[in-house]
Length: 83
Image 1 (tube, one colour):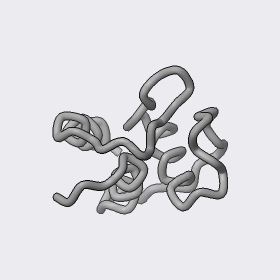
Image 2 (cartoon, rainbow, N blue to C red):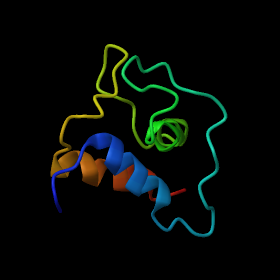
Image 3 (spheres, helix red, strand yellow):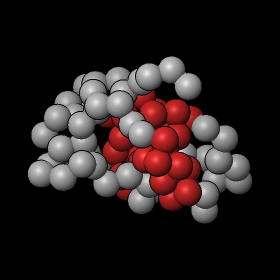
Image 4 (cartoon, rainbow, N blue to C red):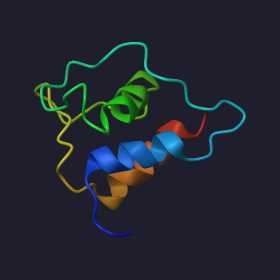
């Protein structure tokens, strides 16, 4: 997998096949100080947080520009398994 930011990975998790329950738009925006509401990845990040897939990196940050580890990606997929 090419190196991409965690914001991109949240987007991939959001658009990945999730039958029988397709993703729904987030109902509210998270309070991450580093995720601007108009950013291309804002809605997928919010959906992933509301769905319990991700929780950010602490101190009110999502750290969308950091590269995810394989372990983090496996955790995203594990958390998304029951959607």
